[in-house]
Length: 198
Image (cartoon, rainbow, N blue to C red; front, side):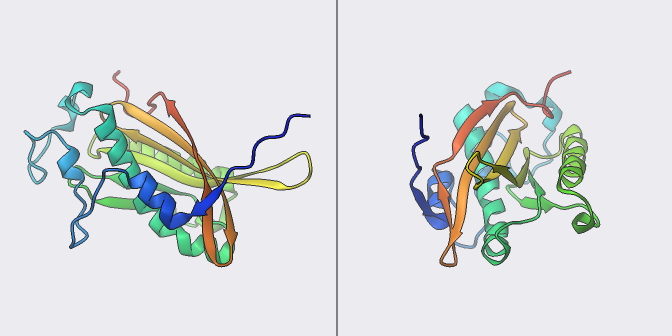
């Protein structure tokens, strides 16, 4: 019988450094996402995002911005993961100025998880349609029962960039000795849903 190889778990901090890649933060904690934006565009200028073309950013630059957004999201969930073993699903947005903002919905705790996720996705779609943000994404936990009765828990991250690229990451995880440990993620390129040309 085929057995899936066990993935080595690493600490959340180590995984954050791996995910961050070449994205850096200045000493005063101001993100440098604007360094990844076309050098002809000043970060503080009013930017007409409707005229952004895929070729103005490389795929690597767009992925760095998505990873930056994801790392900011990780920072929000680590304590909740350690305390509860889970966290509330939330949306993420990244502005042209490199500012990260989480998105939660009202009365989220009273709603079933699938309804929470659907509401967050609907809000992200509305935000993306304004074309006022460089990137949008969602982070949530998916749990599935294995055939042996154990539970496979994964942190799911879906990010989409206005330049026309999207990625899905699936992180197996566990909480052990007061620390979140992540296995190597499965990263999948996906087609953009929000930032598509109509």
